[in-house]
Length: 451
Ligand SMILES: Cc1cc2nc3c(=O)[nH]c(=O)nc-3n(C[C@H](O)[C@H](O)[C@H](O)COP(=O)(O)OP(=O)(O)OC[C@H]3O[C@@H](n4cnc5c(N)ncnc54)[C@H](O)[C@@H]3O)c2cc1C
Ligand SMILES: NC(=O)c1ccc[n+]([C@@H]2O[C@H](COP(=O)([O-])OP(=O)(O)OC[C@H]3O[C@@H](n4cnc5c(N)ncnc54)[C@H](O)[C@@H]3O)[C@@H](O)[C@H]2O)c1
Image (cartoon, rainbow, N blue to C red; front, top):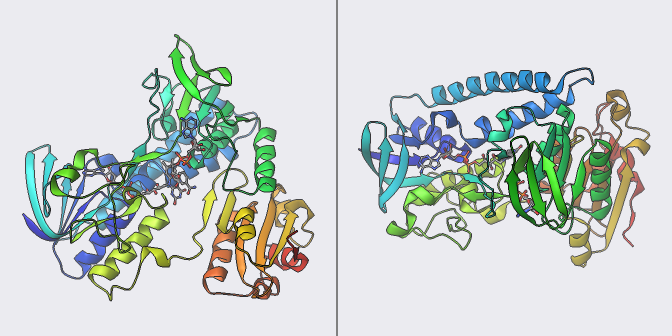
């Protein structure tokens, strides 16, 4: 079969490009190795199901039995995800789109062989998009394949419910699940290999996050080297540089590796870097002309909205005026979905100090922001707002918001930065009341030189 565009992997960039290219009348084939993954990682096993579980966990009452409540929450999660999975399939059911269930492997620079239940299918295309994503990194230590060792996918259906959970890794996945399982009623210990807890976060904010996690019953140990897991009939022990930690289950959340093993990239000259991610230029083209790599597999930041933006860059390269670049991104925000969420954009304190600029800072604990009653109404006044501003240009340089609604607020700051708004635009803006946004009226009125 020959098509105009072949997409490997049903992730955010891949499915968006497939739909858009098909809508312009081109023939498109999309290959996905698992029916459970129609729609990609985010929809089926990552962003959406985990946040559904986070919200369910937050709504648990003390009187709810943890195991029963978890089982109900998982059933709710599964019902939502199966609807989204089916809806994603439906979106690409079009006459000029061939959807192929199978695992793709390059057999030529523009030829892919797909291993399907009915045998091999060969597809050629002048344009190929590789969007195969990433999978949980495995720890290379004894016992890592044990029955009680879970990753971010399998832990969502852990059975029986773990009364004690050890989480290896204090990054996005580790903290989101640690917080979630603590709310479900598990006793949670986080063992992080890094020497510094949340290294990209300012120390005062990291301390506030740590306090909130500890208050939620979570123990966090940094600088821990886990050496071995050993299992008995009813427990697992993580042996580490900080001693032994016994649990009912272990979640390994130590990063994600590119899903390239089955692709046969070497044979056709598609180069990868030392970490295995596909090398791309600023327009996401690989070392083979006409073959692009998008999303997690190209080694960029591992976020769905980055994959979505990769789709825009490739679209511009193959259909538009070719101006978009990966390097033209400004103020890319992120949120860690703990309770309350932690969100950041732009520079942190270390970066503004190193920038050589004259910097102003405003930093205020949420409970002290008098003219922002929403957290009090909601009943969660934890966290703080911290914002850096250039004293000469009034530009916003960066912000960290650890507060309810921060996953929304950070997009607002990001937009202000992208549009080059002045700090006074946010400080003197007319915002609804009672909202979290109005916190900026007060906090930005208290800028001081960064000493
Ligand atoms: C637990 C968790 C929570 C997350 N939460 C968030 C969040 O809240 N917000 C956020 O922005 N990001 C989040 N992420 C990251 C986000 O999920 C990823 O960045 C995003 O899904 C990557 O999309 P992608 O386009 O790279 O492809 P993916 O969505 O990963 O899709 C790749 C697809 O390719 C298929 N595939 C792989 N190899 C082959 C092959 N050889 N042949 C055929 N098909 C193949 C896979 O089955 C998969 O469906 C989270 C990640 C995890 C693990
Ligand atoms: N809210 C979100 O947007 C969201 C949520 C989940 C995941 N993600 C994406 O998925 C990616 C993967 O998440 P992740 O949490 O697995 O990776 P991560 O890179 O965010 O964090 C990995 C953590 O594991 C630790 N670590 C690494 N090796 C270790 C070892 N051997 N022992 C103990 N600790 C070890 C690191 O110190 C780090 O704290 C993230 O980088 C992020 O881009 C995003």
